[in-house]
Image 1 (cartoon, rainbow, N blue to C red):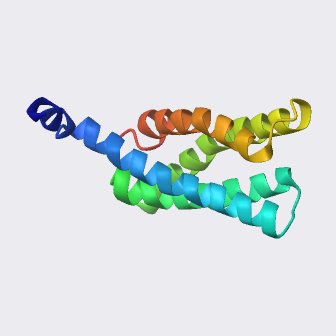
Image 2: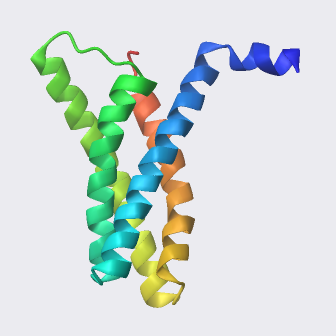
Image 3: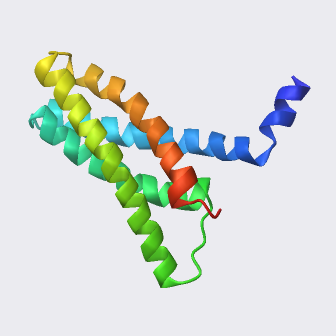
Amino acid sequence: MHTIKKILAKKPYQKLIRYTLVGGCTTLISFGVYWFLYKWIQLDPNLSNMVSILCAVIFAYIANKIFVFKSKCKTFQELIIEIFNFFSSRIITILVEISGVFFLYTYLKINPMLSKIIVNGVVLILNYLLSQYIVFKNT
């Protein structure tokens, strides 16, 4: 047990734990918005998915910047570059998520929520790697 605490006390693991917590909140926002729009507003599952992703990405940038990577931009230009890099990297994973859910739901006839869960696992891993090595690489 002492060894586990020692390992988790190291900076990379602390960042991973914070990322996991923020990722969990981001996932809850994404699923909550998706569920609300799909189930209660009765929007098309694909449109509900797109709106839920947008809400989650905005939350994810703010939470990752402040709590996970503790990024401090010294100039306005650095902030703009960071925002651009974050949203650019998320465009990649948004396309993976939208096309993944679309494919699973439309062609494989998998339940919309299950489709979202399956694709979300892949997206979470991609988001961490892109954030760690591209967006917030100087933190």
